Image (cartoon, rainbow, N blue to C red; front, side, top):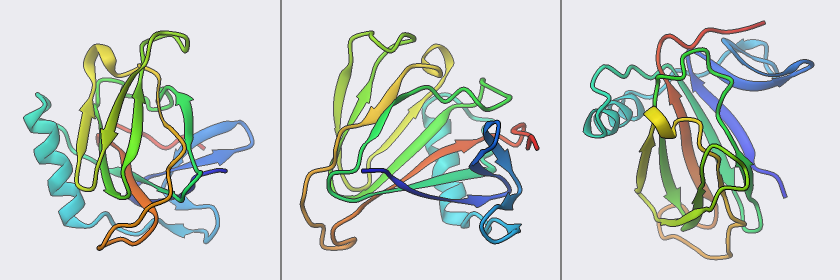
Length: 163
């Protein structure tokens, strides 16, 4: 089962004939992505600063929505032109098991339970580590009901669109 995705901010992450890219235009609407809410922007900056990235300025927000059974396979985030930018992930809703490995897909994995409100930041040497989400278990949350929503992948203003 796949993850439902959308974006907000100046750029959105989309699939394209040649693979993946960041684009200022939503391909489904042919309009700019919705603005990133100031609360997202501020939360991301605060988390990045606390993790040692004080100059971080997010301009893209990938929003992943997981329903029970959905997962995100192990992958590296390597499509951004500035790999010095950290990744900030905010989890809302159902608990999810975050898998965090190494530079090779078969490196040992650490598994971390992410609960509503948890924030994970990684960058530097770990920026290209493989990571993913195990299949989401059935459950409920009093504020968000069933799905888990993961605001994931805030990148710096150096992220350039490639079309």
